[in-house]
Image (tube, rainbow, N blue to C red; front, side, top):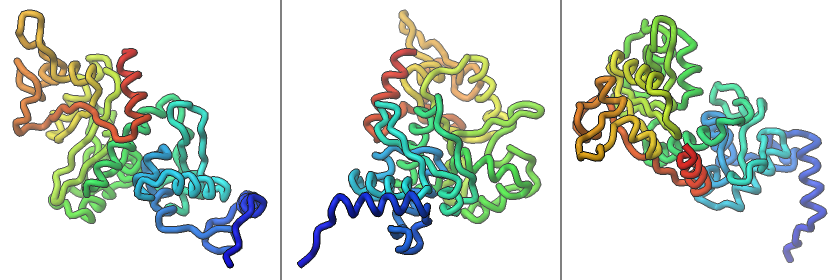
Length: 296
């Protein structure tokens, strides 16, 4: 007859995990790390922070209670931080230094999510959806890490099947784009299609100043880099313009920068820039992004 676990047994195991801070590689730690656990550690390290819903969808087939249990176990073992301080997010998790090291991505642990938490979670939502659809995605953290080592971006793209990448490109010229004599603009995400070329992905929740946005767009134009902007409705209007009261089209910053033809929105024709309305799968993140955009 199978014996049921008592609440006291669960508490004892949790206390043992907190005390020994085990890695989950032996049962003496009170738990065993699974492939799904390791996937979560890698994703949380690459994207910085994940919601419970994002973790469940990416690693446990949408099973929220399984994700909640595994996040709790890894937090007790000292591999994850978790917090429910923001009511609208529910539980969010990000790796500790030990967790990031075990993840094996080559990245250090991300900083604690602060005022840019919503943007970080929106980026994770977009990136995870692209990966789930079979695309290869590099996060900003991976781009910065690669661009910090001469020749590393070319080697990385070669490993991903992209040919013809200059090996002697300077810092910020392969995955990022130069934005002046000494400045670099780092894309939010980089999409790597089979064979290349790479496509930058920008996720914008609120409009930037017109000057700042124009400068970024012109950097993409000079680099001849394809870029997709995923934005809220105010951002889409700022980028591609809107109909005026007399029916004439009022151009946006993308037309001013020379990345869209004047007199209309993004037509979908072949070009360097695509502008699309941001669509998110995590309902809590999507709801908060909507509130955030409405306040602007």
